[in-house]
Length: 96
Image (cartoon, rainbow, N blue to C red; front, side):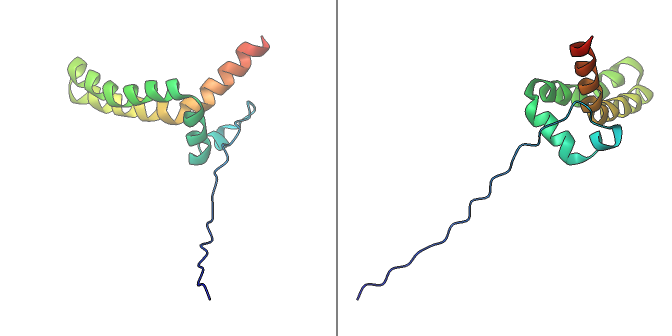
């Protein structure tokens, strides 16, 4: 008599979320929508990484502590608002 062991494997697939162009502002602030946007737009994600890290440094060199604080605020706002703004601008350019 042979002993056989079977291992049940569970494969979990994540489905990329399609981003509708009629995305509302409150929906665009949700982390899963923002993550799907940045995963779908790799170049924009790279640009946002550069903006988030470099803008506070540029602010420090330009005007000291107040520049650093404004650089942090602007970079965080741009990180959160970029998916909504770019989808709206892209939708506007396509239909104009």
